[in-house]
Amino acid sequence: MRIEADPDVCVSSGMCALTAPDLFDQSDDGTVVVLRSDPPAERVAAVRGVVWRCPSRALKLVDTTTG
Image 1 (cartoon, rainbow, N blue to C red):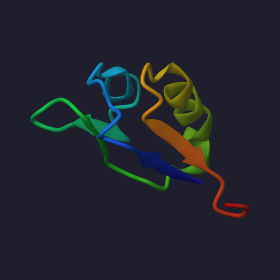
Image 2: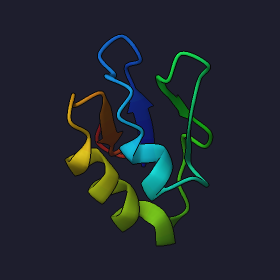
Image 3: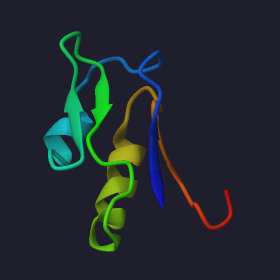
């Protein structure tokens, strides 16, 4: 699995960084920064929740085995 983020779509709500600070942060302008694009297996469920909660849909989780 791989986390992808589109900072151009991000509205800087910070939900990702608040929910999973080990995987996400915010830049100086508040947009999403992915700290680790390859989440460990035990964090995939949490990442799915973060992606689902993103109000601008700037995040997605890509299955690297299928694309």
